[in-house]
Image (cartoon, rainbow, N blue to C red; front, side, top):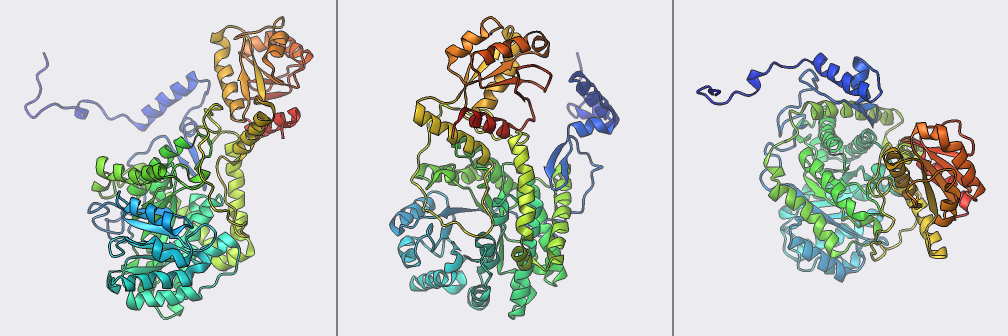
Amino acid sequence: MTVLPADGLSLAADFPDPSHDQWQSLVEGVLRKSGKDVTGTAAEEALSTELGDGLTARPLYTSDDTSADPGFPGFAPFVRGGRATGNTVAGWDVRQHHALPDPVRLNEALLGDLENGVTSLWLAVGGPGGVPVSGLARSLDGVYLDLAPVVLDAGDALDPAVRALLALHETRGVAKEAVRGSLGADPLGWTARTGTEPDLTAALHWAQVCRHEYPGLRALTVDALPYHEAGGSAAEELGLSLATGVAYLRALTAAGLSAEEACRQLEFRYAATADQFLTIAKLRAARRLWARVAEVCGARAAGAQHQHAVTSSVMMTRRDPWVNMLRTTLACLGAGVGGADSVTVLPFDHALGLPDAFARRIARNTSTILMEESHLARVIDPAGGSWYVERLTDELATAAWSFFQEVERAGGQTAALRSGMVGERIAATWAARSRDLARRKEPVTGVSEFPNLDERSVEREPAPAVPSAGGLPKVRRDEAFETLRARSDRHLAATGSRPKVFLAALGPAAVHTARASFAANLFRAGGFEPVHEPASVDASTAAGAFTAGGAAIACLCSSDALYAEQADAVAGELRSAGAERVFLAGRPGEYSGVDTYVFAGCDVVAVLSSALDRMGVA
């Protein structure tokens, strides 16, 4: 019988501390079993993950992974938050976005959200997707403007929208010092979205008004979403937000504001993605970088960046949209842990049209559950002290600052937008990421991985059509696969069936199941219906099974050993039975009759596009 020490159970103290070399040796052993004979640092690199921007997530971080001093919450460089108390007092501001042109319907949606946990309103005003300026008062009927701050998204309708909003506050007797929210002026962001020349006149005017009359109201927004939505990386998003913020500081101080007054007129808006650690690091790095800008400008006391995080529209999918709930939950978690002051969770059906009441409810409740049930806001800077997060924050800040310097050397944000530098840089980033998406190195659940061809489509009222702008494009991760699935849908509508692929599985189930499952998953991503009947074929039965299955193409599925014995003969029989194309699930080899090889890391989009072309599927 073991007798415990009087002061209680001893745990870690009874075990020797393992060394890094011991851990690495164990990693080498595991990799050796999987066929990778690597040693030393190469073993650790084999488990590392590339994050873009030249950053890499390693499998292990220790106290030796030092980074710059993050300081204390509420103090420069504000890495750990702009307020000493963080979000612990009332949680983060739950800011719901609304883009409805009908004032009556918009009013119903606003009141419903405010009654159920939303704490501020982000309204699209003007343009085809927003409420008309003339309908703003009706939209806000019954809204207590002294309790629910309003943030405008008015684009080129900024001036009339602001006048209407401020007049409404005055009519309802809200004291000017009690007005909160943001006017959302972002002329450079509007240039990025539309390609028009920036005009800062209205933004500077309203900044002066806010400075003198509305101390709690911010005039300008540094919106980094146009760059994220065009396919930019995290470092590019940060670098361009810094360049935009600096451009606004120059204009505001030239207009008579002090550097501190100018900083207090800005709110920064960033995308939050399902990579929660990258989101956490991005928000922390953004505060560090802006604190440095403010310090250089002589506004150290006003260097705490006010942040609004919005869940990424790029990651939202149109197929299997229910998975978007998981994506937005992770993004919201990352935004909350990262210290965002306000968080907007886009409804899971955002990519399908106008969200319904259920989708808006889930969106707002995501923040509520994380704060009220998971108590996420009760800890100040919950990621602080994590060796991985601190190191990632430091590396991301370095990469973003480097890009910011590039933009400044090119003449600043306005010049970089005008010359096409921003668009070219982001396009190159998205092209590289698109290659990873096409090869499923970045899998998209429900789209490129585990697609469900039999899912019921989610129908939503179409959003108002927005004319094509001349600015940066908007991209989505599901674009290439969505194009393939749409072709399959059209074929289904025209013929009554989807394009089919016959899985010619060789040998017993224990031998072919892994590759048959891989092939089925791959072809479903392009809208192909796998036919796997009978479960196994050989040279004598393959032709008959293929004909009975009604497919136009076939894919061999088995082990390398059985391929060597049977692949040539079975492929020949499939061709004689009319197969327009014969695939083989496995690494490329020398098999007669096989046209294309599908394997982990192959260009799935190119392979499936070619197959649909060959079959005449438009």
